[in-house]
Each structure stands twice: as C-alpha cells, then as structure tokens.
Length: 225
Image (tube, rainbow, N blue to C red):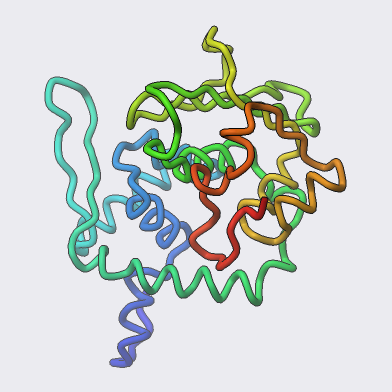
C-alpha cells in the first residue's frame, strides 16, 4: 500500500500497516523464530498469509531467514530496524491497555494464546529444584480443558497431554479470568477471594506466585498475593 506522501509516519505505515504485520513482529521480538511457533502465536492467520507477510518483511529488510541445519524449513530473526520497534510496540501496548481494553470480547480469550504467554512469563530461576510441573484446568473449555507447563532447568514446555509427572501447583479457573489476571485487569488476591481462581500447592510456591509467574509487560501491576 502506497500513500504517496513523504511523511515518515506514512512511509513507516507502508511497511508495517498491513494486517498481521505488527503481530508477526511482536512474536519475533518475543522469541518465536520458526514458522509453526509464529503461527501458534497468531492462531487465526492462514499459513499462506503468514508466508506472504514473512516474505514482505524479508524484502524490506525487517527480518532475515536462515535454513535450519539438517531439517526442512527456516528460522526467522528480527533485524536491527525491527528490534528498534520494541519500545514502540510496548508503548502501543500501554496505549491499548488504557484505551482499547473495553473492546475485548469473549472470542479474544484464546487458551492457546494465553498458555503461550504464561509460558513466556515463567522465571525458571525463581522455582526451586530442577523441575516444576504446573497444571491448569479451564472450567470454560469442553475439549482439552487440562494444560501443563513443564519447567526443566531453563526449558519450558507446554503440554496438552498429561506428562505423567507429579504436579507441583494446580490452577483452576477460566481462560477469561486468568487472562485478566495476567493482563493486570484484576488482582490475583481478589479473584482467589471471589473463588474465581483456585490455586493449590505448597506455600513455598503459592505465597508469591508473581515472583516466578510474571504479569504482562503492558501493565504496571503484578500478581498481588
């Protein structure tokens, strides 16, 4: 899309203004580098459209791709101009938290997206021992209501099937409530008091959850015990 203006905002929008482009950049800056990782973080985008957007970003110097050694497919990495978008995206997120949060609908509370961001919010060095298993049961999901985060050292895996390990902490709630807590729209202690969230586990882990499960970077609030 060309605007025919020399305004730098117009020129930047020509590169970044197409649907999904900023969210693809968000995913790359959050650590996604493979096609399936990007698609999982953008669950409603088609593979064809994602491929086109990645090609456009590459042609404009906003990413580079590298063949995965010994495998099919590529890895995608942000270039320096794209990395410089991080504070801009954070400011845009802050703006959204202030002015766009009332536009949230039931369809926006996606369990895959929530689990991806909960995974990214784990701070492994704040967890005791070499392995921690966290189970989430979502009361508003019929198919596959149970999810696990398996933390082994610095590796964190999302499991939709029982990993067959003892669970350290159980979270029982809805996708909407856990999303709102992570976003900072509601306080951790309030949803527990209102019985909208049940957390079960040893006090060493449950008394200060916000130390090992951080909140959204777009909110000044932490999980409040």
